[in-house]
Image (cartoon, rainbow, N blue to C red):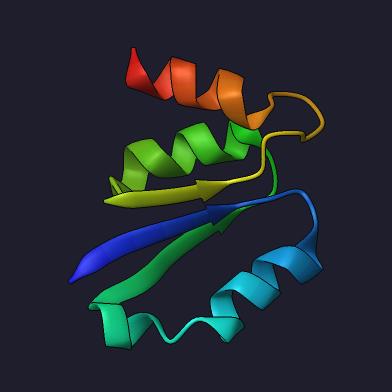
Length: 72
């Protein structure tokens, strides 16, 4: 089963992504959610997800900066 992480600063978007997709159908489970890039970096290190869905524009560390930091 693939682990999926959702990172977005808007709770309603995170909830929508989590609930609108039948994750089990794709052999996936949502392992964690984060509300910004800083929290996302910590949770990525902790959960080691296979798939990360992230917003690009977020306060603080944006999605692109977070991806660069995690990739390094």
